[in-house]
Image (cartoon, rainbow, N blue to C red; front, side, top):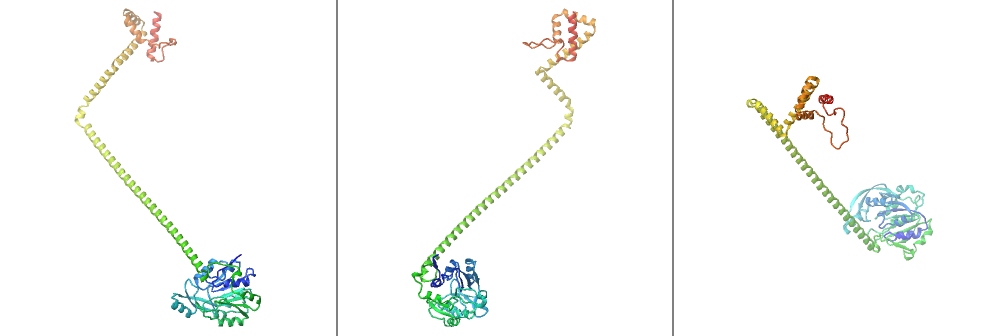
Length: 434
């Protein structure tokens, strides 16, 4: 893998030159700050190294936990004793410090605002007790003026990083301030090997083979690439471009979110309007139905009242004296109307004929039963042949339809009544004898 440098002053380049032969090593980054910008550990993390971060500023500690979930992040301050540190936090910078003098200078000289955050504080020997006897390949200390206090809380017998680099200048200046820290390191068996203008590098006496790596400053032969994320003039242009792109991306994302919100709000308003319209239409339909129901109820009441009125009027007419007195006249009138109707339709003539036929059949039946009377009647009928034929025709069975092959039955048709059939048979028998 290509080594990409993220550190502010090429600290990671110098450390990698000395330690690149170590696979999956371990580091301790005290004052780690951002997991990406100015990070000394980021390049090592990308190459499989893991370690411990000490970061008291809450925002940066949360960023480290989010970006490095497989590493340990201690959100506290290190010093030579346990307690509570009044930490002056300068947001979005690496200037947060527990030294009140430096905090006041940042505020007065540079106009930087800060807030004081009470922060837990432990000695380094307590915070890293779990690493006793284990290899730690490099330790970085950048705590804005408290480096000496951090080293006073260190147990150099149980924790011996191969390389220690420590900030050696007054914050935001080139003024050197490292003597107390160096005395502690020299007494612990470490040798000064390199100063990069901001940090001093020390190598443990038991690893003298590492000293040659610090003979020259970073150069083209280190074969590294810049990430552009270091907060220095060398990378500030690239970093600013990255920030501009990030802001543009965030603004585009916010604009897209706002558009989606506006579209959602418009759809919500449209849906609300449609719901209101539907509710109004439903209410109007309900009102119309209620009106129609009222009209039907009113019409039913009017019809009932009309029926009651007519019934009262009819009862009054039927119960009146004039109605009772004119009842016979109305009966005669009805009969006259039926008679006139019968005359117009010819029902009287046909009725008379039916009655004559019925009387003749009855008379014929009586005549047949009395031989003397029968002979007298037949003698009279022979004297008047037309009448004889007429009587025979009236008592004869119905004629057979033309163009039929049916035989004349030897008995009266079933269509004749029993009385007519009896008369017919007797007359036929008498005619045959004659």
